[in-house]
Amino acid sequence: MNKTITSVFILLSALLVLFALGESVGRIGDLELAAAHPELFDDDSYHLHYTAFPNLMYTHVVLGMLFLLTGAFQLTPYFRRNFIKAHRLIGKIFLITSLFVSCSAIIIAIFYPFGNYLESVATLVFGTFILFSTLKAYTSIKAKKIIEHSYWVRRVFFVSLSIATIRGVMIFGIVFFDYSVKESMGISFVIGFLIHFLLLEWWISADRKKRRIEKETFTNL
Image (cartoon, rainbow, N blue to C red; front, side, top):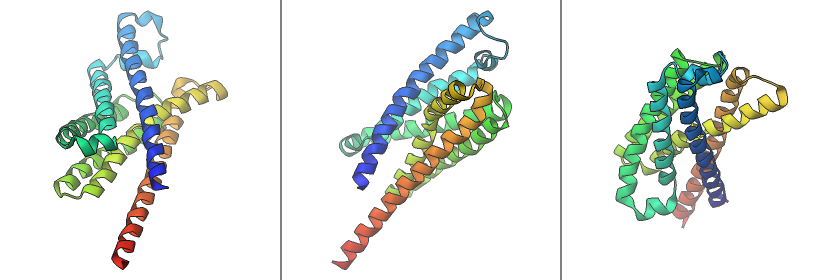
């Protein structure tokens, strides 16, 4: 059962990575188009909003793409088992990019929000959570706590992937409730982050239970 759950999460993560990468490429294109031809966009467009701080946005988006790619490798069991040295190197890159991406998200949430206060609060809370999880992932591997390290890496990666789910929730709100982008952003951030956080903690809890049962079974042999 636990292997099935893990396989489902890995497949779901792969689909979300592909979606998020495509969205990131589109975001870069939108930034360049808005900077070159601002007349094509409404004055309150989020495209124009993000051109006000292009360096920060490019840093966030480009490093976010690197974060997604390195994270996908880290969660691939075959890669971890058969390419230990590459796993460690890419893991370092993953954690470094996670630091920059989470910090840039927090800065955007505090100083350059586009939606309402819910967007800022949700991004600040979960950005801080990802930053904390990144630091815990580093300290746990330095302490050679492999299992705990894997849990914290899962938290970093899967909660960050909620950005893809958030886009889907936003589209749903715009299509079915006639929300504007600005109106839908806050509630979409809250829903997306919570879905990923709760599913992830359920996954980790199931894995802990499995390991505990296996340990008790082995002890009683």
